[in-house]
Amino acid sequence: MRSGSWVLVELSAENLTKRFGETLALDGVSFKIDGKGCYGYLGPNGAGKTTTMKIFTNLLRPTSGHAFINGVDVRREPVRALRGVGSLVEDPEPYGYLSVREFIEFAARIRGAPKPDLDALKARLDLPDLQRRCSNLSKGQRRRVYLAALVAQSPEILILDEPSSGLDPKEAQILRDLIRELKKDRIVLLSSHLLYEVSIVCDYLYFIYRGKIVEEGSVEDVSKKFASKALKVEFYSRPEKLDGLLTHQFEFEGERHVVVYYDGSDAQRREILDKLYPLGVRSFGDAELGLEEAYRQVIG
Image (cartoon, rainbow, N blue to C red; front, top):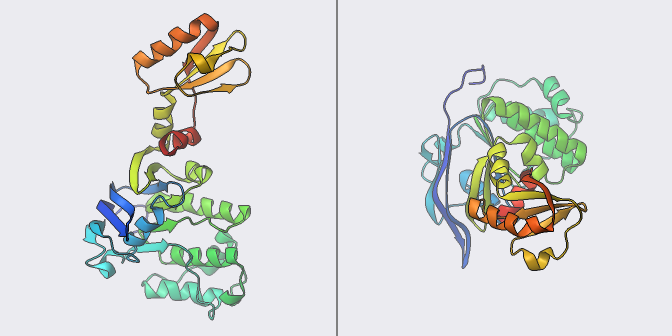
């Protein structure tokens, strides 16, 4: 329902595991999403992002575990589970023999959606001429046409796997603006390895690494959590011989500021300051770290 009311929909994984021969691609992944917004599935290439997306869209079967959409097991009842889902996984493309108009109208029709407002979609996604054959479009244009078709289907859940891959900066910005609009009244599950992308479109993050979810939380909470594990110290002059003094990881910010990473405990904080005070500490406090530093500490 897209009229401002919210019909509860949910998407959940229960101990999802996937093996490819001896390779363990997913290792007991579990999560539950039951509120509108954009949920980022963040990790490096090969972490298990696309494997998860393929299982949720019935393109892969898990070795064990379950993927549920609105309480329906995707593996056992794929048609019913995916009825309200729109997805962009890997590189799907519009049918080349159809025009832009024909493909978008066809996509809406097979889902029983109302006839789309093509002029509005064209303006919203900067679509090419509606009469052009899809086979004559650039990769970025084909991606935008496919996204327009998904929007025309009015799904309750959108599953997008690396959706900005292959897009130029202008096209990527159009995509991000679209996601920010769509997430207001549906679930968007977005996989990405781009920190900038997830930081501006996502509300909640799952960090996946080597097939496991290793951290999760809102963008703000994740950033705050890791900020509390970094101490920023200002000295009166550049300190010397820190390598031999500190066993913790640290880095300079300019000549007189040093950021020291630790486990967040009061004991370690006191230990660090006790070692640094003889070097002429002027001030100290929690470092203001963003998502990039959180990612670095979680993923490495």
